[in-house]
Image (cartoon, rainbow, N blue to C red):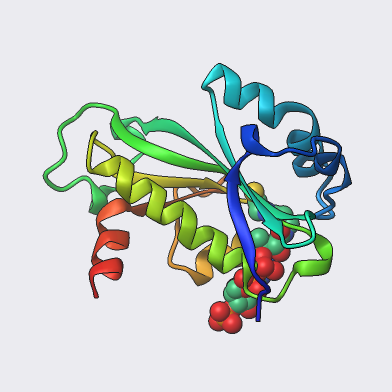
Length: 170
Ligand SMILES: CC(C)(COP(=O)(O)OP(=O)(O)OC[C@H]1O[C@@H](n2cnc3c(N)ncnc32)[C@H](O)[C@@H]1OP(=O)(O)O)[C@@H](O)C(=O)NCCC(=O)NCCS
């Protein structure tokens, strides 16, 4: 069971030093949070949302940005009815849980929160795919939730926004 947390935009984090204490055991994801996430947010390149526990500790985060998939990259069975243009997407660029919170359902919860935000965006602009850049250690996590590998060589996975919308409606 995950304990209570608040999900806040990184720009609303009062204690910036707490960002440096976050450790998900994947160094590039720690470094991004402490060194680049706020700057990316201010620039409007990537929006980061941070899970803060009752005692002020950062227990997880995710970052969203816009993206697109070129028509030729889309697997044939997902091309049906699509125009031969780049198709709009939102990328879950990063998602991480601190090492002492892993295995308690927070990753699942953050993924759900990311889905809710993506669905909100899809109400006001075109967004067809959800993309995720997995790591070798997390690819089975995304497969567990139905993400499909975009191509054979990389760790990029996708899902249709419509699949998420239908799951929420159920
Ligand atoms: C991957 C990660 C986000 C999962 O978070 P978590 O809080 O430990 O996962 P949860 O406890 O919410 O698990 C939810 C479900 O996913 C499953 N799961 C968790 N990690 C998994 C993994 N690596 N592979 C397969 N399944 C996994 C759990 O068994 C659970 O299944 P259930 O709902 O059927 O019981 C977390 O381990 C992490 O931060 N890893 C390091 C950073 C990283 O690799 N991020 C992804 C790339 S950006």
